[in-house]
Image 1 (cartoon, rainbow, N blue to C red):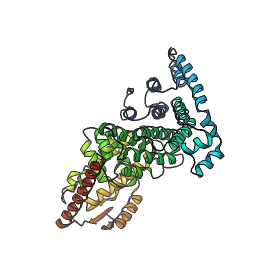
Image 2: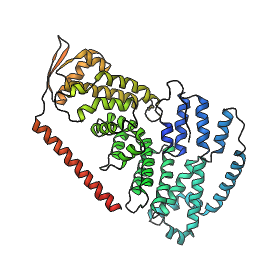
Image 3: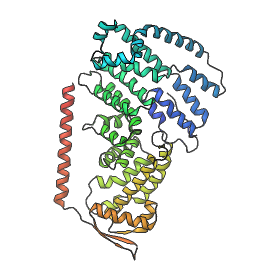
Image 4: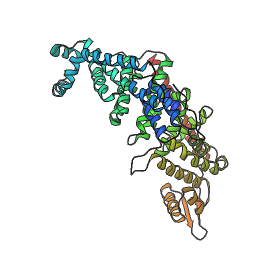
Length: 452
């Protein structure tokens, strides 16, 4: 929809333009607001981008304000579009009045829901509601959404979905995307998680017959919504990884084929949850020619040699701790500029600080695993702390990781006695991994065959 011109070194890692290809225009507007607030791009560049996005909506007043902000003449198309919009809203309200009146009677609506009578057949008998009334409510709700009145649109869209639960999957998915977008824009993220689950289930229904390209597109849109949601809820990063690695390769294929920029978000999720590093690193390695930033490069540098199961003795040569440290330092600016990763709640550690803290911890832990003599001062530098705190960290790490080691305070070192797995143990682990992968592949083949 638009292209953002870079200002100096700022904005070079911004992903707003990438998100715009897979995201509803209304969800892009808050991203542009933050780019303007943080001065990541010049104000006039962001404003022009807003105009491009707003043209895809019916938010004519907002668009007019942006033109005024730029000191531009008001485009001639705005006045007739506003006039038509007001007329459509008036007509839509008249056509939907029967359903609107019912929904405004909260007590009656709640009783109908509790009695299992909030369906088209029951409402037709008790309130004279027809299919045309329900369709009119949907059109009216959709119109409010396009105007940016999400709080008005959401109950109408939910009512439509409840009254017509057996819609064709394609229509149901369209409605659910609208509901999900409203929930996100209204910051009702707990409900948005449930909406996302309903959407995913609809897309993956075996009876959803459409082209492979269309399914890929729907999954890409759903995955971008998932990123919006899961970086704003408790335990969200873990849920994002579960969404992506769902015992199939459906959503990893989305990342590989259409949205490699999402590697950033699953990389951060892996660090924050201290899980799935092997899966994430392999995905990064396979797709680094399509997308990379300092976050994915840090993950790859830190984990790639270890996770590819190299023979003992070759790991140290495959890891460049100095390079990993440089990528980690550069990642702070990437995180700061990112719409989803750069902001934390007041008074709480934000994602940026947590990512950096846990990344340094992973860096040190990997360092400890492949070195027999560890300089405490060097570890203090890696952790960005003092020697005393670094020593405490090492003592605790040795205890919980069951390593055999001792602290030599006089030399300022920790001496580790490494235990190398036997060849038999390495082979057994590889056979186990191959068996698991074969099982997943077989399951995916059966599922796709059933779907076809």
